[in-house]
Length: 90
Image (tube, rainbow, N blue to C red):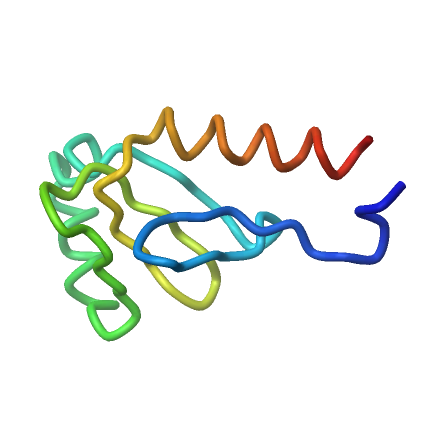
């Protein structure tokens, strides 16, 4: 198993990769922003936000350390995560 003992990373945008194991949540930006509590949460932790979106923000990726905003779709990021996890298990 070539992935054993190694972190598997996911490409999230603009040459940024994060360890797949660090991801707590991947959610649609528009869905997340509908709730005032969520907007307040982002405001509270704005220093942890890394906005990578060059266009419209589509997805929020949360880790314990940072909150990433990507213009990639939730579906695209999940598919990448699944592909990397499958490669790890070869």
